[in-house]
Image 1 (cartoon, rainbow, N blue to C red):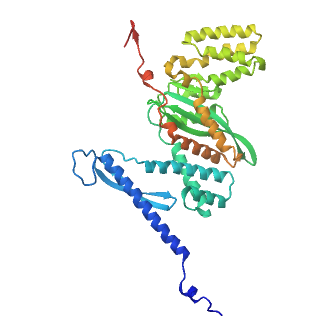
Image 2 (cartoon, rainbow, N blue to C red):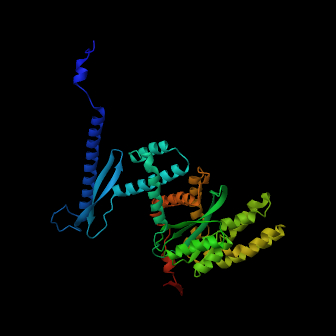
Length: 401
C-alpha cells in the first residue's frame, strides 16, 4: 500500500532550518554576552555606570564603534565602547588580535606549502569557526599580504640604542632555477628597554648593496638613536653601517667569533681554546680584557696554533666594544643570540615550503612570523633597564652623583 505511513507525509521536519535557527540563537546569546562584558569593562574603567552621577567617576563614554568577531558560533557584532580620557582596551579584543595574527600566518603557510584548497577550507573552519570558500582563499591572502606590507613599512618611533642585524638564506625559484635569496632582519631594544622587530627585507645576497638598501629603508622609516650595532662580521654590513648610522659603534658577535677561531683549531683542542676565549670576555673591564687577549695570543702561539692566534690578534678587539656600555647590559649586547633565536624560528616555520615560488612569497611568510612574534609577550616584557645608559653614574671622591 502507498499510504502505509500517512503521518510521515503530514509531519515533516526541516533539519537545515532547525540548525540555522539554533545557530542564530547561539550567536545571539554569544553576542549579547560579549557586549555585556564590554559594557562592564567600560563601567569599571569609568568608575561608574552609564549615565550614573558619582564622585568616583574617572571617565565618561564617547559612544562606540562596531567590530566583528569570528567565534565558534559564527560571526558576531561587537559594540566596543569609546572613552573620552583613556583608550579602551579589553581582553576580548586582545585575544581576537592574537588569533587574527595566528590565522593570517596559518593561511599564508598553508597556501605556500601547497596544501589543497579543500584542506585549507577545513583548517580555516577549525580556526575561525567559519568555512572559507575556495574562491576567497586567494583574496584572503592578498588582504593578508597588504597587512604585512603595511606592518613592514610602519613608522619607527622613538630611539633604539641597541640594534641587532642578521641575515638568513632561503631557496626561491628564479627563471626556472632554484637559487638562494637572503632575508635581512633587524631587531632592537628601544629607549624604554623593550624589544622590537624593526623590519625585514629581501636581498639578493648579504653584500653592501643589500645591506645599504635595508639600512636606508630603516632610517627612512625613522630609525635613530642607535648607539651600538650587534652583528656578525659581514663586510657589506659594516661598510653600510658607517654610511647610514655613522654615530653607532659596532659589536661583533662573540659567539660567531668563537666559531671562526674553532675552524682553525684541532678538534682535540677546541675545549681548551674555548676556555681561553671565554676568559677574555669574563674580565671586569676593557683594560683587563685587552691584557687577557694578549695572554691568550701568546698561549695559542706556544701551542702551535698560529692561525688561531693571528685571528685573535686581528679581530678580538671587535668583540670588546660592549665594555663601553653599562655592565648590566653586557651579557645581552655582546652576542647576536637574541636575534639568532628569532631567525631559527623563521627557519623552522619555512622549512616545510622548500623552494619558494618567488621572493615576495618568501618575504611575506617570514614577515608574517615576525609580525606574530612581535604581537606576543616577547615585546611586552621589559628586556633591559635603560636608566644606566641614559643617566650614567659619575663617581666623585667616593660619592655617587
